[in-house]
Amino acid sequence: MTRIQHETTIVSALTHEANPGLSNFYFFMNKKLLALYLGAFLSCSLAYAQPLQLSNGDTLGVEITYYTDSTITFVHPILGQQTVAKTGVSNIAELNLDKVTKLPEGEAGKAIIAANVAKKALVPAKQEVDQANKELIVAQNNLKLADESQLDAAEQQVKDAATKVEKAEKKLIAAADAVEVADNYIVVASEVSHAEAQVTAAKNDVKAANNQVVVAKAEAKATQKKFEVAEQAMSTTKAAGVMQAEEKVATAKTRAEIASEHFELAEVQVQEAEENVVVAENNVKRAKGKKVNVGFMGTGWFKGWDSSLAIGLSGASGSSVNNTFRTAFNTRYEDKKGRWVYRSFYYRDSEDNVTGENQINATLVKDWFFNETKWFAFVTGVYDWNQFKDWHHRLQFGGGPGYQFIKTDQWEFSGRTGLTLITEFGKTQYNANGGVIFNPDGSVLEDTVVGLEGLIGADVTWHITAQQHFSISNYFYPSLTHSGEFRNLTNISWIHSLDWFESLALKFGIRNEYDTSDSIPNEFNYNFSVLWGF
Image (cartoon, rainbow, N blue to C red):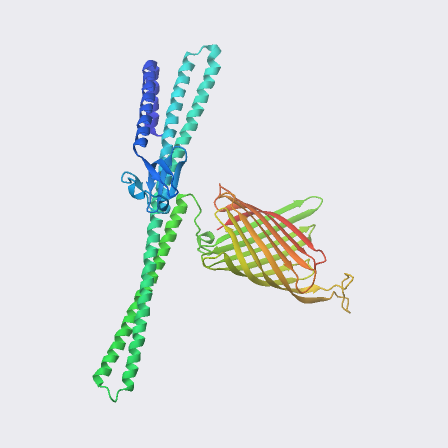
């Protein structure tokens, strides 16, 4: 509560204590004024109601609240607030929009609407504070007049009223903060719109400059050809004509150089405008309370990439000593042309100084997007090292087509298919009965095995809230060189960002690989770790 509001509350309390009848009169007058304001509001709403004829033949009596160059927003007693395209309104020319607020397109218009909603919420919050203060004053007066039998109930009434005042004041502060955020959002959204307009203008300049370069080079080429013709006919052509042709060539070349300079300047302007867009978008994120990507520890490394470093460890000491350590580094970058995804982890588990698990994995995926289609192409490379597998090292290279079935703010679902070339180094060799084959010197026979596999996979991500998301992927690799053998790899992860520490999150993950060619086909790991995003 501000100092002025606090002093007003004290004055109201003193007035009620001195003359309760006068306070009741004020309360009665406030109710009459409220009824008067509501009546005036309803009258104004009816006065501005207009018939809206839709293209399907329906006619609605509505109050138009906002409009843009392409849409109209109105309020209907039954439908509530709705937004329709102007192309869907048949009597657009007959509507009176002079007294209706016109909003800009895009984020700037949304920001103004959000600010108006926040400011409307401020009024009932103030009224709730006033009403709670009045109830507190009544409770305090009742406490003064209460006898011993009513004292406990009166004190409880005062406490309840004070609690209600506190909650109402918190709600008012929250509403005021929302108004401030909305006002800041208007400013940064306008900056975004302005920066995007600069980008559009700069790109138009680039296009115009590029056209100038093409025209100038064509003129230079045509004039050069004329010059060559003039040289061939020098015996029959006057020297002045040759000189004129040379001057035309020089002029055309000069024009081409000037056009190239304009083109380079326009490209610089596009780059500057795009940088302004990034700055404005970062301001929007800050206004909304979101994190701004400034790279690894503010150094600018991996700036623009969605990166994270995870560490998880556990241990116990008693009748036995065991410890588990896992670390992972993941990063991802996506734009209109394509997507890079890199994932890696190291995992080690031991008990009584005896290692039970010790492995490294690194996976790199590159996607290429195609314009105006959900199809994309991809290549992938995977490196594995595992101390306790039948092989020592494993390399995979694959690729093929993919399809983005769903991509929204809440859901992402894509599928992939293709071929994978897999090479296993130092793989233990087995005979037909499943026994290990030994060399003459008694050592285990190992060899490098190369195989070709099919690839069928899917990735699903669910952005549950702004703070948490869930993802699952499953890839099936049927062997094309060893009939009946296959591998299946499943990854599941759940990440929850911590509100009290920016960029910090908790992660729970599951990784399961089933390989029919290994002596121990199934490998199941789960992990719980702390994740730092940057």
